[in-house]
Image (cartoon, rainbow over all chains, first blue to last red):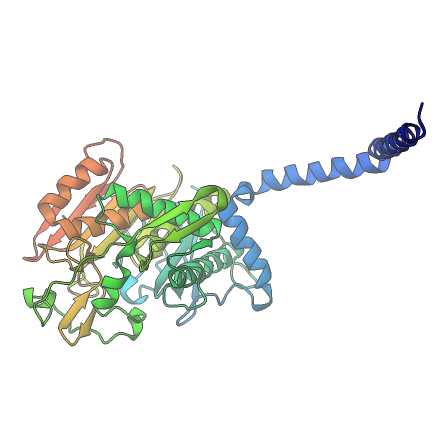
Length: 133
Length: 327
């Protein structure tokens, strides 16, 4: 066999040996107990997250949540323009309810909150005003 | 019967009043997380779709008309939906009429425009002082799905205000139900969704009279579904040529002039009801209700005409569960 061919063959053998060594090393790492434990915990947590929150898979909600995370320094309560929010307990419904009404003063939306089939207000359900655009 | 608490949060977003009522207990430490989500979601939608915010994604898109632009999944979803509704309405819903809206004087956020006087509009309200007819110029765009990019036609400017409130409400409703909230209402300036299960009472939605703030013309009861109202009296402003309103007819490029003053549509989705209500306003009561019966057989509509008359169109499909009162 001529010298250049022998030299080339040796290079190929060294290359193949290195590839085989790396493959064996990766196989060894993949079979290790530490790797198996990490992989199974990652799968578990992913499955749990999906079970808890099916919306997490929605790309639109993911974008929203990502931006939310970036904006977390400013909080999420003040995202709207204008006068800010008002928060109120609106009422209860049920057999012994007093039909607790809401404040009814929300501008053009009113928002009376009489609830319940047998309440004293005589209303048959949740109430709201439509508004229009 | 179990006691159920309904808690309500009100705030401003998208230049309108937002009401979110959910069957959750008030949170001892302030806003319940579900209400925080609602506020955050509306703020996100406004940041993405407002044409009045120079930093919004929509403003960036309009600035780059003629060039391909990478867009968010959120923008892509709404553009796809807008394209669907554009076909559904035969082009009467057209987000590419922003130049006509601006020409009609709707160049600032509605809250900053000089308001038109109260009362019903006359024919003169719809005629420009010069008597010239503005050329309609509905724009278009091309979506490159795999690249998640869009290119607006040159000179095209889009306004997604006619769909975004309803879409935001629909998406938030899905979010809330996925979080296990059994009943609720989300109302964005008249585009609303309600939901509930067999154990919760029905919602009764009173329909405002756009001629007389504080008065109602009817009410509809439903457990699940959407209601949206559109009115030529809803967003009016004053220009040198007289009062204008926001319902632009793409066929003429001018504010619509039909016999409809106000239309309420009750159906499945807030975005669909919002667009259907506007379409009926643009087509007029007769043609509009004929179109609705064909395009959305599951929907009901209540139309108020210029003479103050009310027309109720009931869905031919059984099982909607909606009951109208006073119409």
